[in-house]
Structures are given as structure tokens and as C-alpha cells.
Image 1: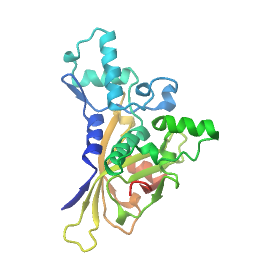
Image 2: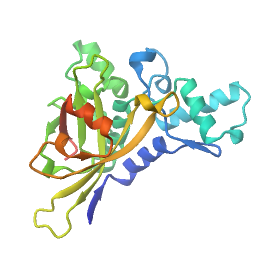
Image 3: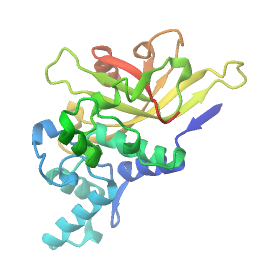
Image 4: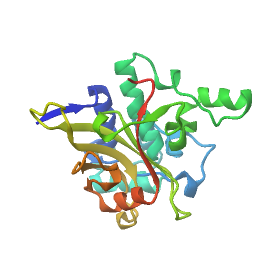
Length: 256
């Protein structure tokens, strides 16, 4: 089976969130819902926008403050510390850091050099967005035509995104998946994709308090001529969310 993946740098970024390590403990970074916590003025690590390094520094600070030896942490207690301290990552910031690593690898420049903020108002608003791109780049920004374009299923490749905007439920939030791997049919003349693997940050109701965070999944392509929401998804709840939203397969204009 032919296969394409994200750059090593982007894969390493995913790994740092998926397998976050402090001392002997390891867990995935929890999902952060800023709509619920409402902590916009705090540090990025406390607003769902922190890099792995910033999150690590915050956790280490908590350990020192509470006189806890990091070597005594377990996987479960580390996840509890993160969750109880409201430290996590939202889906758009997680996507930003992955795509920034990919941009650095492919284009040798940070993502904010090419990213536009069409919804920013006035000179000051645009300046703030440029100075704080991770904080101000949301799913709608990634899904805007100035930053990305809709592509067909036949064109899919690693670093493409699946964006979900809106939905009939007022509690639904916009969501984004990053495609990190694509399998292609071996020997086929058109090199048709057969499976898409993705990664995202999310909280499902069944996750409970301490089960949220970075998750991986896949979409098996059963018919290339049908929409992506008509394929076979490994996460049924996510598929249900996608089917009631404006779900699009998109590619950043400046990466390719």
C-alpha cells in the first residue's frame, strides 16, 4: 500500500500533544473549551492555546508550587493535574501548531507569515491577530476562502483539513481535523486514495471529565464519487457531527 504522511516535524508536534510526558507519566493533552472556561486574558497554556513547551512549563510550575515530585506522577494523575488545572488545547490551536510545523518544514517560514485574518476589524484588530496568531486563528479562519480552498476527495493529501462549521444544535462548536496520513491504492493508474487518517482535539460526552483530548481516527473511502460524509468513519459520533454541519475537505492555499 502506498502511503503519504506529514513531515517529521509535524508528526513530532502531534506526538508531543498525544504523548505528553512529565517525569515517568504520559497522557494526551486534554481538550479545552474556552466557551465554557472563558479565560481569554490568561496565559496561552491556560486558554487552550499553549504549545507543548508552554504547557510543560505550566505543569512544572504547578508541581513546584504544590511541592509535588514529578517522579511520583502516574499517567492518570498527570491527566488529572492537567484537567483540574484547566490546562488543555482546543481544536484550532492544535491544528495551528501542526500546520505551523508543516509550513516551517515545507516553506521555511512560520504559518502566520501567510495566514490572513479576514474577520479582523480595523488596523488594531489586524495587528493583534498578526501578533497573536494562535490565539486569534479559529476554525472559521482556516475555512475561509482567503486561506484555503475546497478540494475533491480524489486530491486529498496529508496537511489537508476537514472543517465543520455550524450545525442545528446551539451547543455545537466549529471543529477541525488535520489529515496526517493518506493510504493510496497500490498499482492503480490514478493512485486513488483508499484511507484517510486524521488527528484532532475533542471532548465526547462519554469521555467524562478526564477522558478528553487528542484523538486519532480514520476514514475508509468506499466511493470516491461521494462526499466525505458518505464514507466509512471510525468515529461514529464524529461522523454524525459532520453530517449535520457544513463539512468541507480543504487545503491551505499557501502550503501547496
